[in-house]
Image 1 (cartoon, rainbow, N blue to C red):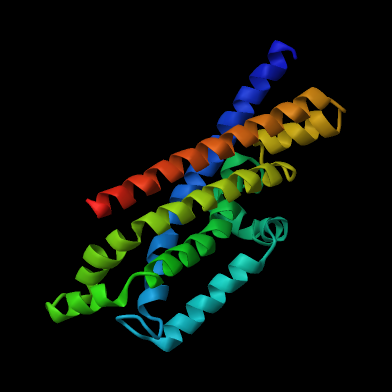
Image 2: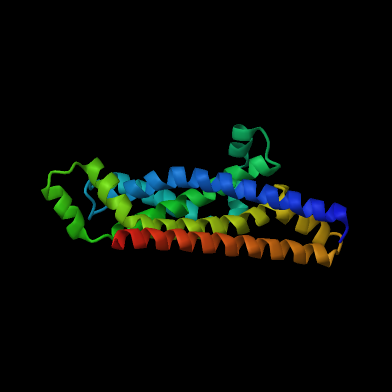
Length: 220
């Protein structure tokens, strides 16, 4: 492989990391409160509110059911409105974030619902406010599950970013299509696959480690 192609792969890897990192951060910032609201407004929640829960669940289900390629095309006007273009790594962050937010929301909701109800009841008996229960009980208790879910989200975003590259988003997906597929450069195609696999493995290892540390802290 030539030095130019090696440089191209490094740049593509950095672009992919950039897209995944920013979209993961946006998804976490938006998905975390979304999941909390879904949890606390459910039938078993501390702030039961069926209309809000039904509406939010419906929106989340729509976001999760839409294939990423279709979603990416469908929200092109939104992407152009936010970043001024529908092509490039910055443009790809918008659909990546939109696709990940509902997933993070459901992950957070599921993690909080698995918490023993007795812990919440004890906090209520001690006079804790709903905000205190969320901040001091639900989130700390559900943290290991949330971290595990966010790890899966990041892994999905790595795959989505490669898919976005086929539509002009840049990154490793774009390199795989332009060089590996269109120019029949098998070594480039294999290199992009190896890099993506390594990224996924590193994300999984780091996520598992952080999740296990939070569980260890809880036991102590």
